[in-house]
Each structure stands twice: as C-alpha cells, then as structure tokens.
Image (tube, rainbow, N blue to C red; front, side, top):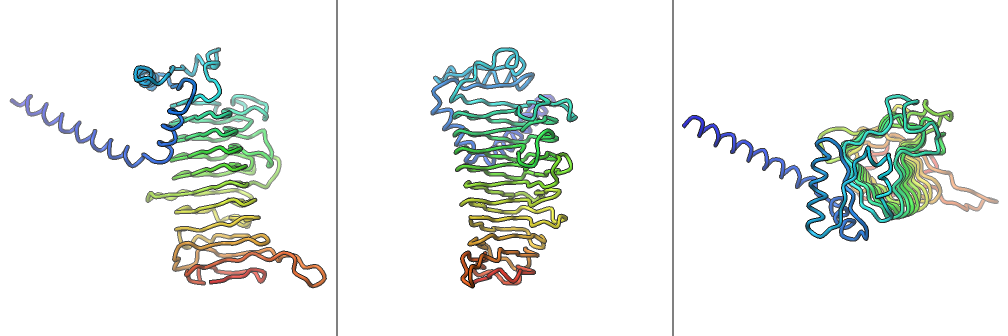
Amino acid sequence: MVIYMKAIETALSLTQAYKLGIERFEKMLGNEFAKAVEFMNNTSTHIIVCGMGKSGLVGRKISSTLASTGTPSIFLHPAEAIHGDLGKVQKNSVVDLSYLHLGGSGTSDGNSSDAKNNSINVSRNLYVSLRNSRIEGNFGQAIQVEHNSSMNLEDSIITGNGVGIDYSSSFISIGNLSTAGIYRSNLISNSGRGIDIWSGSIVHINETNLTVDASLITDTYSTALNVYDSALELSNYSDSAFTLSSSDGSEISMNQSSKLSLSGYTFDTTSSNDDINVYQTEISLIQIPEGQDIKIYLGNYLRLHFNHSFSSEIISQLNCSSGRTVDNVRINMPGIAYLNGSNSSLIGNTSPECIVAD
C-alpha cells in the first residue's frame, strides 16, 4: 500500500512538472515560433536538424517525425558537417542548431585568424535557429545574416569575437531584407560596432545584455547598435535589468528612415558620449526606466516622440543639431522633441538649438 501511494504521489508530481513546463512553453510562443513554422512550411528543400549527444538523439527523433508526417527532413551531426556533410545544406534550407560551441576561450583559439572569415553565415533565404550555444574568440564576425534570411538566437553567449576587425565592422550583421530575434542571451566583450542592422531588415532583441569593448580594437570609437533603413525593437518584460553598453561611443545610432522602439531597457551612462544618436529618422520612447541619465542627440529635421506618460526625468541631456543657415536663411531645421502629453520635466537639460513641443 505504501509503495502504491508513493507511486501515485510521484506520478502527480511529474504531472505538475509537465503542467508548469507547458505553461512556460506557452509564454515563449510568439512571432518567431510562427515564423519558424512558416519557413518550414514554405521551404522547397529539406528541414535540417542538428545536434550531438542527448540533443542529437532528440534531433534525430524530430527529424524522423517530420519525415514520417510528410515534411522532408534530414539529421546533420555537427562534427560530420565540418568533415564533408555540410553540402546537405542548400539554398532555402531550414536549419535548427542546439548546444553549438564555435571558437575557443582566447583570441588565438577561434575559428580563424583571418578577420574576413565569419563563424556563421546565414544567406539566400536560409532560416537558422540557434539555441543554448556559445560563439567566442573568433577574429571575424560571429554571425552574418543577409539576403532575405532569418535567424532565431536563444539562451546563447557570444563573447570575445571581432578581435581582428576595426570600428567600421560589426561582430553581428543583419541586412538585405532579413529578420532576427535575439532572446535571453549575453552578447558581451565583443569588439567593432556591435550589431549592424541595414537595408530593410527587422530585429527584435528581448532580455539580452549587449556590451561592446573598444579596447579590443585599434580604433577607440564603438557603438552597440547601428540601424540603417531598418526597424529595431528592444523589449524587456521580466523583473531583471538588461543593459546596453559601449565603452567609448553611443549605445544606439539610428540612420536613414529607421524605426526604434524601446521598452524596459537600461543604458550604461558612464560614458560622456550621447547614448542615442539619431540621423534622418524618427524614434519613439516607450516605458524607459526613469532616472536613467540618458543622453540623446538629434540631427537635422529629426523627431523624437514620447509615447508614454513619463512622470519624472528620463533624459539628462538632449542635444540637437543647430541646422544650417546660408545668408541668414535657415536651410536645415534643428531636431524637435514632441512630449505628447508627458511632463516637460522628463528632460533635464536641453541645448539651445533644440525645440521641445507639446
């Protein structure tokens, strides 16, 4: 009888654990999950599942289940991939990677001593999901996503990459109509310009720390996020604090008709540089933690919108371009900050060139 009751107790405990796991999984479902399903449904080639060890056994089962239900799929062992099997990955493929470790612990242990070589290239309509992985100590870029491709990065660490590149290059590049979701990851102590987002791309970063170390490169100026003609959303819905940090430069640079949405992120405000530089675009601030000591620079014709009723100071210094005047005629207009119902006290100091409007 005692054994019988113990068995029931254990079964109920497992059932509760499964229930909590399903509830947690439900919260993780979002646009990236739907996008992954869409990619798999629309691909004209095989879905490639990668893994080794226990994750490899699970990957083989996933691949087998997909194939048996009418979706062409093959399993690719990562060790075998670098010894000739990488040819299985073709244009329009969908690749799922878990527990991948590229590079070593130091600057000489990476995948290549040539700064032109990248650790991971995602191109030509390719979809890659990378989870619980680590990319470190590589001379070139850690990840490059381009040509209408998509990447999903979750619960991973990218550190010490880009040691062979200068300030004009980034350790992650996402461009040419590509999309990326970066979730619950740490992108730390990488050099270069951080993440470049360009040419009509869309990137969502959630609950991720991002730091760029200018001491690792020959040039002393660095930027954590560079956006050109693209959209960037930074969000944090947890109780933990997540930080953007650039040791000598702005945290975010917005250019050429880009869009920026900020929600629940903090900035490293120890640098004397502006935290957000805005050129030829508009930005919206949403739910920024108050008391942040954020510094923002607005270029000519730029608009800053506050889309939340802030109650206290969130911007310590707002700097603006003075515009351009020829023969006493103003050619370019300075930047304008629209409060949209917020209290004017949310801006600490404003340079004389700026215009603040309701």
